[in-house]
Image 1: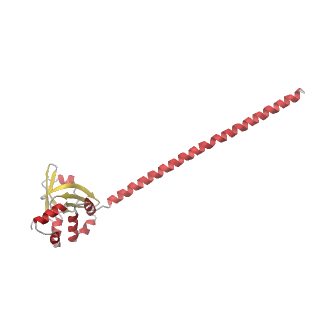
Image 2: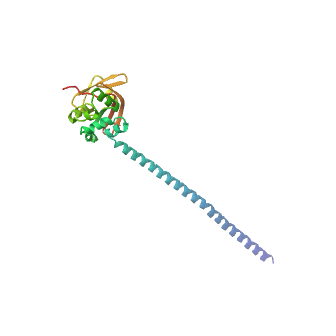
Image 3: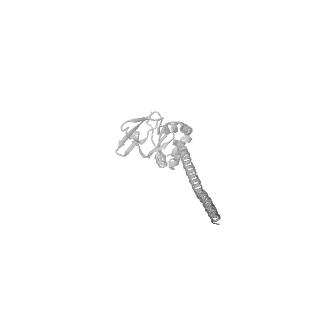
Length: 209
């Protein structure tokens, strides 16, 4: 009888060990799944971040591109108080010239300066704009065929700029005040893709002859 009990006991021990081994395998399989899900989530987050960074970069590049397209006429128009000068360029038939490559420096009188000029000369805007040749001469005296920012202009005290009119335009500097001819520069360095605009307080009159 004793041998049978001994064999039965051995069989029970073996069965118990087998069940324990199976249980360990099931436990290992269960813990592996969350690790896989966590890894997938991290990858998705990485992909999302990369996409957002690419989108941000594209937006910046588009914005920069739009800014680069603005020529001297566009930036002058955006100022809001330089419309009379732009209308004069149109009346003189030379507006399209300043959509070109340049470079150009425009010393642009404000609308208020043009109004004072017309009043002083006792004429209407229509009368002033009627003579295209005279108008081209006056406007040409406000334009230089180089790009002269404020640093360059301020370094030219006592010197002259050669205008499209062909006449020299004298530069004078007194501290922070900079004058071209009889006009004081009010706003500097309105930068465009084909040059620069400086706003002045007086319409420049080219020298006789």
